[in-house]
Image (cartoon, rainbow, N blue to C red):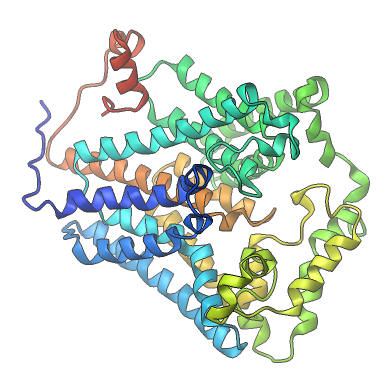
Length: 476
């Protein structure tokens, strides 16, 4: 049976919205590049206004008729609103500024607004391919930038060393980790999605992303991916065949990685963590990592504080950790507030000899920030958003693995609040869902696409053919 191309929608509003959504993504993903070419530094904050506005515009203007899309949209919207309300309640109770509540909400939930906008789009096959091609193009630019920074500009020999290898996230303090995380996330998605390309090319993309991570010395990315893989394995224990496959693959990859760390000089930096004496109940790493959970309760003076926290931006999230101080000239006139609990945790970092060794040991990390700022209710509402994403939008193990990775990062540092990384994660999960959704709708209509022939997969004839294949413009 031949595939019938769907009719184009009569209204052009949808086309404009799909472009706006990509613009919203780009406003955060490429903001550091724009600053590099002399845009004012405020460009790094513009996306906090653009993305909520475009999400709202998308919700108002799109006319989705599919019941599943409508159900997911409403459930995700309710979860996001609940998290926002807890931010406001906590701010009001703790005399925190309203700007604190709004920024804290955006740091943790901006990417969910982008996911909401993408899920709302009634994408045609053609528009889905163009949307996907743009995301792939952006991902490749990030990797290419990193290789230029390392091999052409040789920024690893400048002040900051390997931390200067940041891909498109130049100028950001954690740009090297963000760039490497995006690269490896892309390689996972691409390996699964690029089925019209030969296996050697997909493996090459994975290795290129892995080397990007090594050039940037972003060791915690491998740790986060490894822990996410273990968690995914536990979700598969009710399926023995899948569990055996994952265990076998994990053991092989783990052994290869361990051997490489011990024998390849370029990977020697991973030995920073391999010091058993710093772990355990009284180990320095354990004491430093858990400092937030000892210090924050010292500032409780109400029975409600464990439930709603000390207020957004008042403890160890990205906002309270340094953003309020860094942008005080801009935020203080808007009513921002700070709290001594943040300073107390920083003092604990400064007092520890591990404080400047690695962000792996930092007590300022995402989940601790949510708990400290918003208490157990804030933590529960945030987990509810992820529960909706996991159950409604993660359609396969690739999506689930990608969703687990930032949750693991939330145990390391504040990458769960890094806009470039989290917007990319949200975009990939929503894109994967749209691919699944479009395929399912085509199947209902009786539309099928024959699988590519072996000749088509292995022998693109011209550079244009290769470009189409790399961007998956010819993929079903």
